[in-house]
Amino acid sequence: MNFDNIDIFGERIEQRKVLLEMKNVSFAPEGKQVIRNVNLTIHEGESLVFVGHSGSGKSSMLKLCSGLYTPTEGSVFIDGVNINKLSRLKRLEIIRKIGFVFQDSGLVTNLNIYENVALILRYHKLFNEKKIKEIINEKLINYKLDHISHLIPSYLSPGQKRLVSFVRAVILENKILFLDDPTTSIDGYMIRKIIDHIKNLTQQGGVVITVTNNQEFSDAIAHHIAVMDQGSLIAFDEPEKIKSSSDPIVKQIMQSLNKDKELADEFLKIMESDIF
Image (cartoon, rainbow, N blue to C red; front, top):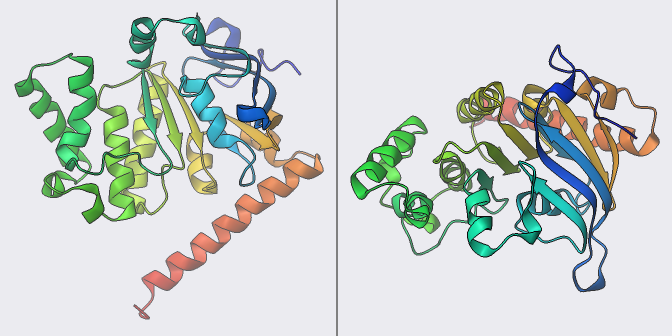
């Protein structure tokens, strides 16, 4: 299928620059097939959401797209460059354009929150310590994490860890952002802030690629939805077209998201009642 001419911005999408592309990508570590022959093109200003059952390959797709995994077959291009054929130094230059929120937060356990966020700024050697402190403090205050900046990750709630991971991912104002289940255990106010950041980034021509089973979050941010099943990309389209798909597997996956949304809504009603 050819998705290159989908019009979602009020203009033909081929007029926009391609920021990320996967060509015939397969991933089979130790002979186990995880991703099967995926082709994907993402243009500037686009927010893509991956959905699928557990084990369908969503997280692996994020890591392949970002260069964290190397495909067994095929190529991944970021901003027109085949990242899998770069030297280490050249690859670092590309990675500077990328922010990544890991499913398990990916925080360094023996560093406090401030040091975790500072790590990427120091690694890329872009600022002096005074500027680093200024940048970090502004972001921590914005996400209401400044009062716990001295704590190590083990003292944080799951939601706080996820927020710290998000702050670290966006600290360099990266052009491309990868989010693996970013809203789990985060309250509605902070989810709104994340949504606002995503919308601002895409409006400025950036790209956001997200894995989520949060239907409301997906509805708020997605220009396209990519449906994964058993390592294959089985559908890619605008949200409303995916939701109205007649494909039985796509329908089943989208119904499971709706079920998750119903459970989340019921939980919120209980939490807001007098029971607690």
